[in-house]
Structure formats: structure tokens, C-alpha cells
Amino acid sequence: MTEHERQERIANGYLWEDTDEYLAHQAKVKDLMYEFNMSKPSEVEKRQILMRQMFGSVGNNVWINQPLTLAVGTTVTIGDGTYINSGLILIDDYKVTIGKGCLFGTGVTLCTTGHPIDPEERAKGSMYSFPITIGDGAWIGAGAIILPGITIGKYAVIGAGSVVTKDIPDYTIAAGNPCRPIRKIDEHDKEYYWKDRRFDEQR
Image (cartoon, rainbow, N blue to C red):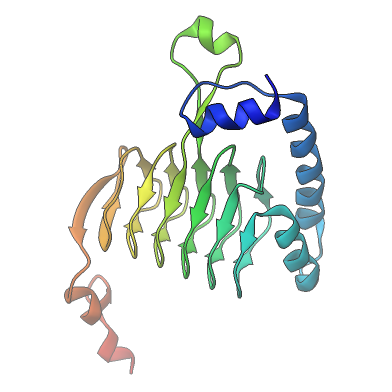
């Protein structure tokens, strides 16, 4: 299988296997990832340059805390003003689109790739990959895991520790394993910032 054939198979939702070219690309990106993770806290500009070398596209005012784990990098786009806390894991064999103004807690995993259930097929090294999309302004809680093919809607909130197996609509709070919608974001959320704590008590 050539690298072009591998990419075509992924785009069509077919099973695929590693190629030498793909593994060589991974090795180069992981060297950049190592530099990013080992940089000093004060080396902000260095990390900004490395982000633009690692990822397909990075917007303005994007912040990613160390450590970061990724496989491909160039499959990932990140919109303006997104903040990603430490420990992000990207299994990014296919497209990961992160919108503008997103907020990621610690230890989030975005996984575009899975393996067949059949043990004989799995032993061959077969994989499948489907894209992940995170809408503008979404908040992904600490430790959440987002599986292949999932779309998180604009301004949605995913509770900490959730395992997201189905799409989550815009302006929806969802949590659990498996992650399920709890309620829509509404006027109540303009009055209260946490439990019985009101915004107007802080001003």
C-alpha cells in the first residue's frame, strides 16, 4: 500500500495499515513534539513556532500547555483563541478540527482511529479512521475521551471524564460514560456561574 492509497482508504472510511512514508512522517513530527514538551516555561515564542510546524493550521492567540501527545499533527487545525490545558492526547491519523475559542481541560483525548473487533483482522494491524470536529466555543472537561467520527457542537460543554460516543448538539451540556445530553444552555446560565453562585454577586 502506498501512502497515497492509505490516505484514499482513510478518506473513504476503509481499513488501512501503516506505510513506511507515514511512519517516517510520524517520526519527524514526534521530534518536534519532543522539543515542544521539553521547552522551558519561558520559551513561549519557541512553542508558538513549533505549533505552526507541527499542526496543519493554528489560529491567533492559541495556547497549548505541555505535555502534548500527537501522531501526525498536520491533520489538525485549531481556531483563534483556543486554550488547551496540559496532557492533550491526539490520535490524529485523520482530520481533527478544533474551532475558535474552545477550552480544553487537562488530560483530554481525541481519537480518530479504532481497530476491528475481530481478533484475526485486528492482528493484521488494520485500522479505520473518521474525523473529529469540535465546534467554536466548546468546553471539553478534564479527562474526556472523544471517539472517531464525533462532532461536538458549538458552545457545547462536555463534562469531565466523559466518553463521547455520539454527536453532541450546539449549546448542549452533556456528560457521562457513554456521554449523554443533560440539558440545553439557557438563560439560567447567564445568571449563575456555579450552583447557587450568581454573577451579579461578583460585580
